[in-house]
Image (cartoon, rainbow over all chains, first blue to last red; front, side):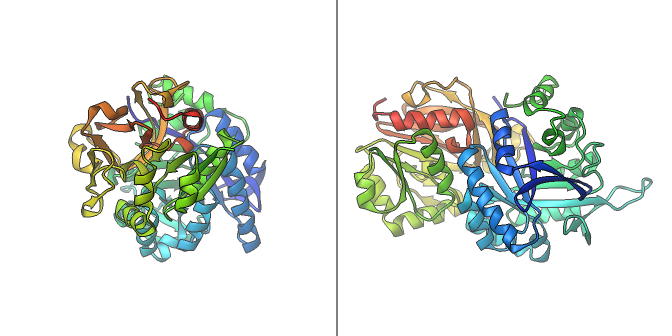
Length: 257
Length: 212
């Protein structure tokens, strides 16, 4: 008996629609979020991540409503991220039916927010999202820095040190996205995934760059990830969740089949 | 009409539990409440829980939920979930040690204190889908032994009375994930988030007469 590795389809949602971009631009429509989430729930996804990339306040209200509808029909864990800045934002999402919230930019501006959120709601529902980018040349020892605002804004902060700081403040999980890989389908950045997985003691979700099922396997076996997140390979029916799970199980990874 | 009271003491997300109960029992009334009279009048009771144990116990005492739980036990079927299970034990080492409601014999301890040595790099919280070894009980009806349920917790329960253990799990150590005492059933995992297996367990609870 042991804990299974998780497959997490990710829904990037803008103004109530699932969208998928390449390196955070060039957006394609992928359907109604509740319908998409229901399909993944039925297929045996282990969790759903919902990232709200809407900028407007009207859009945020749509998001709360979407999360509510999703939570009535999807009986697996649901993480909601995007624009979470205050404890009131967290309370609102949890009340709408989210199980965890993912905090990104707000943690960079005010790291104490993570500590406050973890103390109030428990570490188990506080995910810190890290968008990391390789900043060294191929000949140098690799080093990654974190970026905010959907990858547009550099911070100068070292990604591994940041992950350590966030978990020390109470983050219960790290959602690690490689900015270099996101949407390009060459696989996760296994270097930063392994570096952070080794550095911290909380579960790591690998994200950004999945193009085939071997990438999911590599994320676990080489990257040391506890969960693997992907979007477009599932949204556009290149692979199904059961197919991905079976593929990983056949390669010796513990899965919930 | 059957009513199911989900006890509200201001901690965590009760809506997931309520929505899952409504899904498996569309004809029942599911009420999120801390009103002693409503709970006394309900047919069955769910004690959920998310968050840190000191705040949970503190809020239960402040709102009189501790007395409601004591009155409910033995009266009607009751389901404790996650911290709702831990709160029923005698003591938890979380938050520098907290006396709990003492309805079940045993203590709650942290994975990090116990198991780092045995499994090397063990991540805490224990988060995700793990297999449960079942021991005979009506609430497992229709659920295959060793089915996976969704867990998210850093502290775990060990019962001192092994006859109460209805389910165990392994994560670095063996620990108890289901305890049964008369009409009380308590689980560490989240049935409301455990897809088919979890919904079946909730359905079994809704139909349960409270006998083992």
